[in-house]
Image 1 (tube, rainbow, N blue to C red):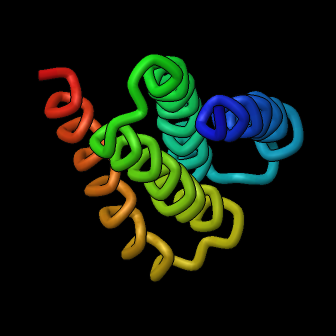
Image 2 (cartoon, rainbow, N blue to C red; image 1 turned 180 degrees about the horizontal axis):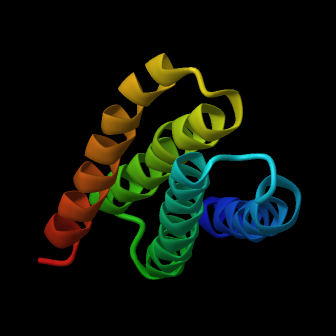
Length: 118
């Protein structure tokens, strides 16, 4: 149930972030930084939905691999999307160094899901 709640919060935040980017940031960001921001929203939303699926699966069988999957998606959203949001809004390029760590967390989550469903 925890992953379902977290997914709901992340889904809400993804929609709010997308709306904020479309309305408040469109005129303030360069096209390149707006694209970075939109990438953050896309991965945020996709993985919020994936986390919802993990939460639903976990209600049937909450095995350890599903736990790894869920927490990897949480870490991925925070690090990948969070660093891209921050990079787009602040322009501080060093934040982009965090992004690949979040990407690896997403990969770990998908691999753990494959393993959990064997």
